[in-house]
Amino acid sequence: MPRVLLLIPSATYRAPDFMEAAGKLDVQVVVGSDQRQALEEIMPGRALAVDMAHPEHGAEQIADFAHRYPLDTILPVDDGGTLVAALASEWLGLPHNPVAAVQATRDKHLLRERLAASGVLSPPYRLVDIDADPQQIAGDLFYPCVLKPLALSGSRGVMRADNAAQFVAAFARLKALLAQPDVAAECGPAARQALVEGYIPGEEVALEGLLTDGRLHVLALFDKPDPLVGPFFEETIYVTPSRLPAETQAQIAATAERAARALGLRDGPLHAELRLNELGAWPVDIAARSIGGLCSRTLSFGTGMSLEELILRHATGAAIPSFEREGSASGVMMIPIPAPGVLREVAGIEKAEAVPGIVSVTISIHRGQEVVPLPEGSEYLGFIFAKGEEPAQVEGALRRAHAALRFTIEPAGAKERSGGRT
Image 1: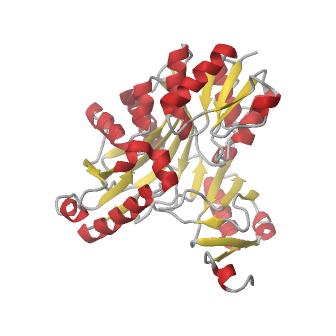
Image 2: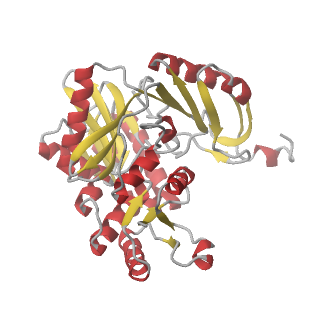
Image 3: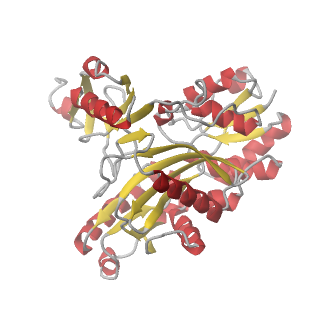
């Protein structure tokens, strides 16, 4: 029975889906988390606390553990575990992507350097020190431009600027975000710099794939029908199959595979974001992991195999009956946070779930929890899932369901100021 170390950050949405998939396979799962678990004491060899914020230390912890409790493979679930997994796998002689390749997916400046050097379409870019004077930088930039943190994901901290004044304002917001203790701890030295790159016009898509010896199996191509033009880049609706022409889809797949090759990625899940315009397909971001949040629930392969099961089969060398996605169209809406504050109430869930084509509505934020929109925030209010005969039907169902929801978000501190009344 293969022993798989699943690196599952405590903040991830995806632990239940991976554990359910593992339960269907002849696989023994070891849970690696950034927090110590009771399972470590109860069942030695089945759980491990891993320092994912410091990859070398985390890899040392895994290597020490593996000498006592051997592992067959290490599988990171989210971005935070990819570099730890690569380092530990290299030290232990387990299958893995090259460490340098994974490092490039975790550093947006390094990613741009590698892609540009390989001839993949890339915008102009510049690395800036977060303590620099933004007024001096602003006068020597290309506009419109996009300011990005080096290490955060999910569009967090990403802002567009069309002129010098907008850049200075965006720079101040990003500097404040990177100074937050939790963000600074997550980013490490990358919190001291930021990337400025030229804005890439065009529609955006997301590709979900699996690499085997450098060859890309495209598992799904998602359209993003809401325009992502800034000033912030909050993603909302994903729908598959794509409505783009077959030749355009082939170009996207070829570009994603070429980008993976330029970085040195050869094995395992690949999630790529690309933009399309008259010049071709432009990689926006490449990640050595599968799609985030609960979005994988839109995908099913063969006769009902989940994305998580497919990934586990690949990681353990088990047979994969089919790479073909199920026939119907499907989609997800990541419910955006409309205002900062404290979530007090969610109304209209039953009405939203009654919309034809809607599979379910999942609210992932607890009532009473503080919510922060992008670009500073890192979460969504929840997820709406839909299926239908055609992508347009799925998109329409998602929009109607979202319109049925009502959120009561109270300004932070309002309850205390009002003596406890809501």
